[in-house]
Image 1 (cartoon, one colour):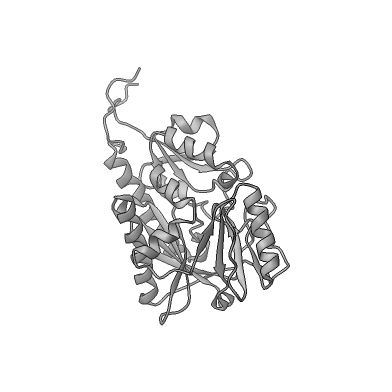
Image 2: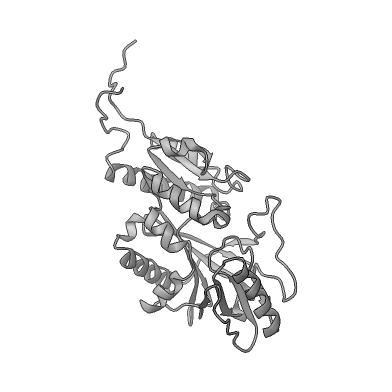
Length: 314
């Protein structure tokens, strides 16, 4: 039997995880079906599987060990033919010094100071959070009331070649932070995250894989003032990178505080959890369709849409 249109392209799409959790923690379980409903076919692979470099499009979703292999990971992002989010985005956002860029652009952020290896670490008065500037899943992040203990932890991170981020501990985090999810640059949904860091002197409880701290999540319906802060952060990032906000297939802006004084805690553009499980079935279906449409649009911009003619195949 002859195919009616043998030159129709079927893009090879990969969701990238890590060896410890190739398909992530299960939150993204519906994405393969959401893409299939649009005629797109995807599979999961660990990011360091050589097969990822033969894909037409790779979508970062659960590459949660990249912080321990950053140089290798960033080199890989440049080898992959088409990556979402893009390599320049990943390189900028994988180091939390991007917060200084947001602040310069006028985004209200949690005050953040950075200390490279070898630099004296200045600890402000009061309770503080000390964490590596390159990190994920709250690994290496701790709270301190003792300046000496905070300085010692910072020294350990610096001795390991890590730049240190020091922030004042904002007690509003006790009521949780609001995670604002954007898809293709547009507002999608939100959820709240309970405080991740335990009291000073304790360590966060990690999941069985050891790749991220366990979280307590709940659905949320934030005030528009919080969404405005999210859009402000997203626009600042896009302008800094010279792209459109629509070029971010996904983004998550973590905010603390309410409508009267919200501050950005983090802008996640590499592989954030998107909180699909916090949505009811109908809302999740609509949001994941929005995600699939973003993938479809990204393929079309690259000439890789499912109806793109590839020409003769060798």
